[in-house]
Length: 154
Ligand code: HEC
Image (cartoon, rainbow, N blue to C red; front, side, top):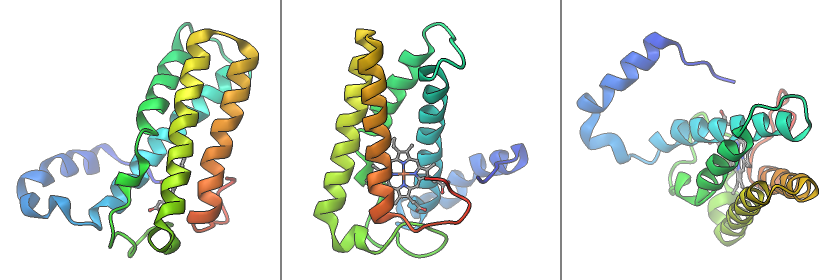
């Protein structure tokens, strides 16, 4: 997992002023989507701690579920054409099999919404089931469309 130092963050915050015209360059999406996915992974990981009963912070599962439902809403936007070179684990078939990729993204969006609905409903079995389905939706897409890296478990 890449770490952002405060110094790098401060620098990054100034960059838009200088970059301007380049802000929509496809390759800029590589870093952006990795940070976005990392945020999504953080919410899923934190939810897992709560779903498994390891921690029980009041009201937090609803927060994570809301974030997950929001972040999985339209993952395809993170993958503009020509954002397939450089330091990315995105596989070529994302663009050559775009329909299947869209389907995998839709599946995650539905799973995110179902998880949020289950959390709102408060039924433990439903929360567990929809959380497992969500994990499958993440893995399903990674398996087909993300290059394997030895250090990653999923
Ligand atoms: C529609 C496909 C798709 C779905 C669904 C999806 N991902 Fe990803 N994910 C990717 C791809 C492709 C990459 C590689 C991106 C890159 O390196 O440019 C990735 C990368 C990641 C990374 C690594 C980010 C980094 O810093 O390199 C994490 C963590 C991650 N995803 C978590 C999740 C979680 C959690 C879910 C489910 C809630 C999920 N993803 C759902 C396609 C998907």
